[in-house]
Length: 283
Image 1 (cartoon, rainbow, N blue to C red):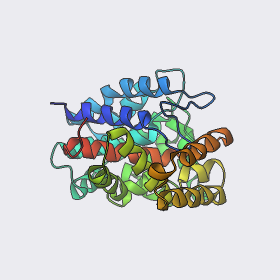
Image 2: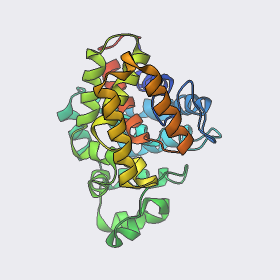
Image 3: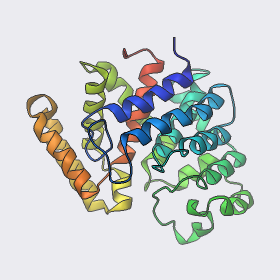
């Protein structure tokens, strides 16, 4: 039987192995500077931080350790957002892996957890939008230099996530009880076929229902909406079953255009962990 940390690590591996996931690295597609092997190495490295969370460590330090070790490969940021979802979910699993408990774990984070979150940005470059003027001192891109402002304002990690909505859908998961992560787990459990096929189908369903905030940050909201509209058309037509070449074409097109719905992949990884931990899917 796998441990909770083992299920979280496996979720990272299953997410990147599933194909097609339009715009994302998968076992058939690399990005110019970010390859499939980088994601596998990132998942292996992150294990130490995931084990810390499973052993009861605070969310912030466990997340920082996971990111630090994840970043010990040559590709850079592979799974920052996924780990930001997985670490509190791993902590919740020590009590009960449910939305109320996961939400409680998030809300009970501390100022020290927020400081660790900011220090995690010292280990890897993460694409984020510009903060509002009144939050310039709290810009996560400042890394550890922002910690005094975090301390002065008494902001917990949940507070930081709350201030990051609506521009960041990983933060939205924290604030809304990980609702899409749990929904993804339910879809994975209800789907048919091998786990790789289920994962690709759930990814497409998530992308079809909500514009990806990473795409909006790196490009613009119109591009994010256009990607979602195209995914919705394919999902509604059940294209993975009836016209898989159309989904492959969509995947290749996004990669060629440098459009990466990475937040959707993060939520997919979180859903995989929940489904694995609940033994709702077989691997």
